[in-house]
Length: 98
Image 1 (cartoon, one colour):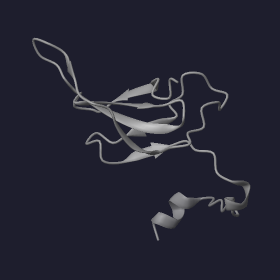
Image 2 (cartoon, rainbow, N blue to C red; image 1 turned 60 degrees about the horizontal axis):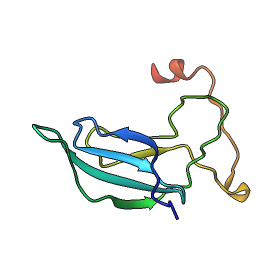
Image 3 (cartoon, rainbow, N blue to C red; image 1 turned 45 degrees about the vertical axis):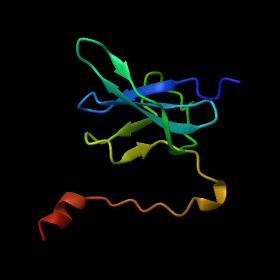
């Protein structure tokens, strides 16, 4: 079973870790070290991501990581019951000047 097969890899800004989603929708981090030899550490599952992989735009990232590797932004599928009302603020720039 290939549950750890990497999909949608993303590098941490300093190049010390590579993140990827697995076939069972978990986000994994792998430490790497480049030098005379390229070394790869053991993959560590971070959390279940349930990323939304098919959003209709090819090449659009499904998740991203902050430069320090401490926080993630995910494009996720949410259950229908979690959808709440949407608030649209118009002319918000004028409100900042007040």
